Length: 357
Image (cartoon, rainbow, N blue to C red; front, side, top):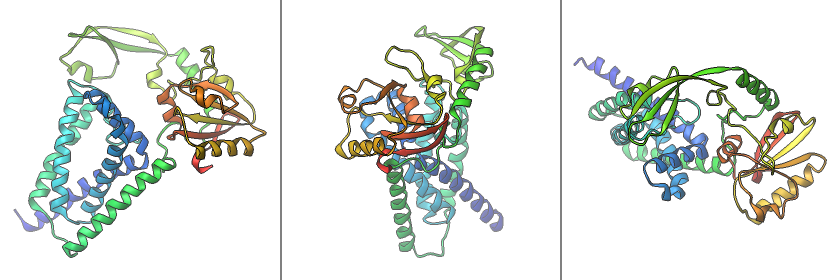
């Protein structure tokens, strides 16, 4: 092979792999809690639900490793080592996504977090394409003008900074909010518009039944993957009203103690409003003091508590209006165990981890 051609193809392989790993690692590291949620889904799908406590450490490690690999590949540092690690990771990812696309479907793989959705089949094809690229790069290697000891030192620094980035995000909020509940979003307009559209729209759904369990599934009319699954048998196509699965806020609902959805009532409130989002059953004195400071700072504002369960111990010490929201929706609203959304006339003005108030 022509030496010049070999040089440029190796350079191209390194840049492609480096860019993909850098993007994937950055997205995971910018939203560590979201990555942990995907890890929990995989644990549940593969029967490791009892290891949920490891979801966050795995998310931190995964984001940091991918971010480090991406930067090292782009800067041509320890290319043989990094490409070898990339081969191992892509092999594991290929097996997992193959199972996700066939016998253990869990939906979006989360390889690019909530920034970019890829279907299981698209993710599998991506890994199948990248794996031989990593193998070829591993075989060809690459030379750097930097001494090897300095390369290892740079790798250690980059990995340490990547870990610190993930820890920072966990203690505060995502650096980039990929969820639909970002600052500046007018929830009042969005929710009302979507619910009106959902009420008036009709959609065609494909009905399939699992050949072995008898469970029924419904897929969008343009979903090609359902036709490729051997475990499913087509029944018919039906027209359904609405389409929450296709909306950004399709699962958004706020319930009072009587089970009524009062989301629109809260959003129609004129003036500033504080939503205190609590996703844990208990918290320490530091958090309690921060909540007290919040009530003192916004004593002239309406403050409501949104939670996913009846946390009686907490409810006894926080006097406010309590409402209930699905746990996953709470996590989409704010990536914090205890978080604060400040709204004004239904518009999200700002979001905080309670520790940052």
